[in-house]
Length: 219
Image (cartoon, rainbow, N blue to C red):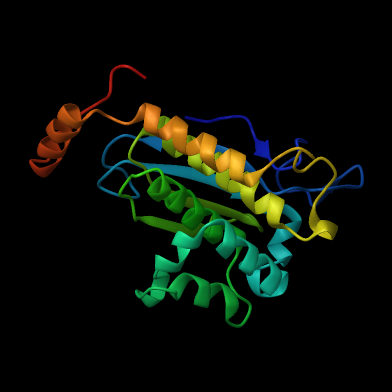
């Protein structure tokens, strides 16, 4: 299902244009789809984001530098367990640091997954691919609970914007009173309120083992 563009600066821009009226094009989510069952991307529930990096297409993690990577590691220590293409702990950070590093669409994918893990979910799958237009990427990640998964993607965008060097942050990117610790804790509480109870969770897991589809009715 499509959604209005969500950007880290609060300003909408025309896709495909580098700048509009001299204003920097921000990193933003152009579209989002939620798949509750098998799809082109996976045989289990995933969320697909169409992410426009805007000016940040020219700023992979290698260029953003150690300060950005170290700050992300401090905010989400669990990312050390992400193996990425190296399939071993520390692999994701190795990928971010070596050569040019990786692009922020790939980073957002891992952050959205790790946020859900912090909230107690067991999700691991994600992939990011160029979507055709320069700077636009298809970001796909697994989710356990629909609303929690959507919130994870939105919080991931906000966190990455907050960690950008000051010269790359457009005005009003992150509110002056925004706190990562507070936002993280609020997300975890939200996810826990959305979590299935023990009995329901057992039924869902049993259904999944038998490839029986299920749908939550009280969203």
